Length: 143
Image (cartoon, rainbow, N blue to C red; front, side, top):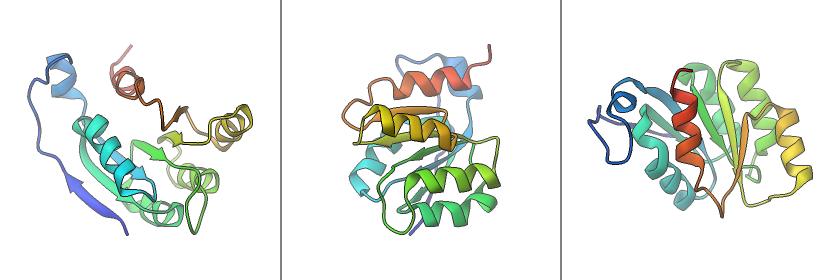
């Protein structure tokens, strides 16, 4: 089941630049079959998004991607109906400009390589999401 969230514009958030909070508005799709993980990701980076859509499977993400047109997608790998690697390929086929970040508990070189080959722009292990906020900030800040 996909659950949309609409975040109001927010002002200054301690520790982040005010200019980033004013200009960094995006559409975020969170794809994970665990509610706790979706809530954590929403807590960490949802404030950067004007619209957030949560999906519980790769099949749902694929079905909703064309209409939602996310700028950023966080993708779990092991889910029912369609795994995250196949869902990443399908999401990017429908929306090539999206950045897909794989977030999974399976952290091996083979998994990282498979995620990169599927088109993921970055990879985080679920037990170490410390760099996720900084990564999203860097993606949203113009060079």
